[in-house]
Length: 619
Image (tube, rainbow, N blue to C red; front, side, top):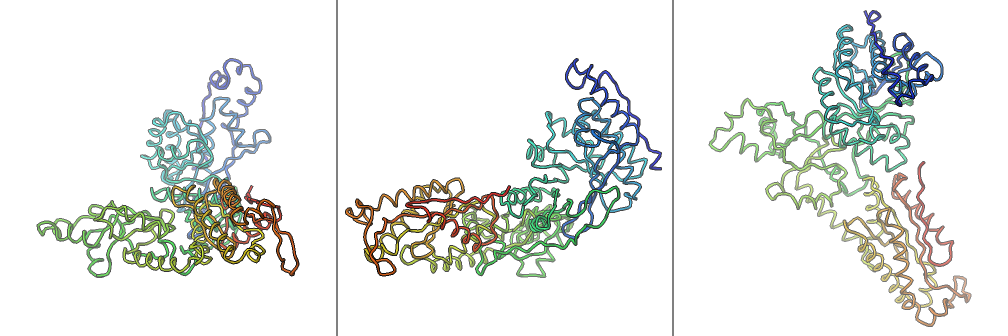
């Protein structure tokens, strides 16, 4: 049956030849030659379909196949991108699109596609979709002739395409939706429309462009962008596909982020056959959320999974859950993986079971949960810090401040946290902080510094760390006395604290005292050099106080060195080494500390006040 399905296309040569530049194109022999070849391609059997599997990251099974167009012709008609550019210039884009889709579906049908629990992704140009419904007629005829359910076809629209009339485009897509076809945005992030296209189309799938996947395990900006895209899409019920996976490390990161589906050469190359197994074992590398330390840092550390209830479940099922478990304070209402509401024990029983006049049970017996659930509930990501969450809770309505908190991870339901557990965690954390301050400067000490940096790394935050060291401090301390040395340490701590506070509007900056004459400052990448320069300038201005006017004017002082010999020493100065996590992905505090120490040593090789910043950019 499949072999008998053929589509015939009619051309208007005068329209086709005038589709590029005005009248000058009509006499362009190259365009005429391209048009003749395109006619043969569209009318004949020159188009070949290859299939690349799209795998489920949880099960490793094939969710669908992307149909990729090839030709059996030589150059310059064997490169798909260039071929479609020629079709645009020749005015036959719609005909080429239709021929490609027809060939893809017919080829898939030969592999018993209809009987498999998979879908077929076919690329289509927006211009074709909006072409007065002619393409939808082609699709419908094809589906009916081959007995293929329309919901098995996913129309991929590239995000790089320029769309001038979004209203008309949305109306065109609605025709396909109503018939059962599904929609995907391809190459998301590579074009100009981005979120506007996402909100206009409301697709079933978003395919993230391969640019953001390459080296995602080493590039923190890419990691955060993909994580943000996945979180946003999951919250509004859109499936995410990551394209272009070529390394095991990339796959592992994407599984841990919670991306639904993946495809790429590492898993399976395009093939004329419908391959069903990946090249490598698709073990689920996703890790449970954890800050990796002792005391809890994030709300995900103290969340527990409460089995959710579906919005279509009966209200009586919810009542049964609360009745059987007296300790159950709240039930999250989850549609697939998306949190859509909450049932809080007290208000649920009072409003919907008892009711104002005692008729609640009778009135709600046959209702479903979505009719009684609360849509105003507290939702946060698992990597929200406990400190940040405590600030957010204080701004809630007083009536809702003691409700359980619903926790998501990359937009998917993760668990719940009782307010009592949160208060306990805050109390425990405050006790630990009080014990971790340096007694001389009052700044957080080494243990707390490690927890703070580890917390920021776990949140994949972009920040710079400045390692600040006083040059020639030991001979200064020996020569001027320990009391004078303590004054210098406290003065530098005050300078660092004051400078960071002056450049901080949202409590992002952080200062710590590692010990002795070593300090650390964390700040935003775009501010680190400016802050380091100001710290150095303020410290330099205090040198007359530190050394006294006589030694300051001389520019040096004489003291005993470590060998017990008299030596001339320069005045105090600072060496500041700055490491950025803006691009490079740091895995741990020890790794970051090692980099910072290395860069600080580079600064110390220079004479006087020196600042060295190492970005370690990933290309």
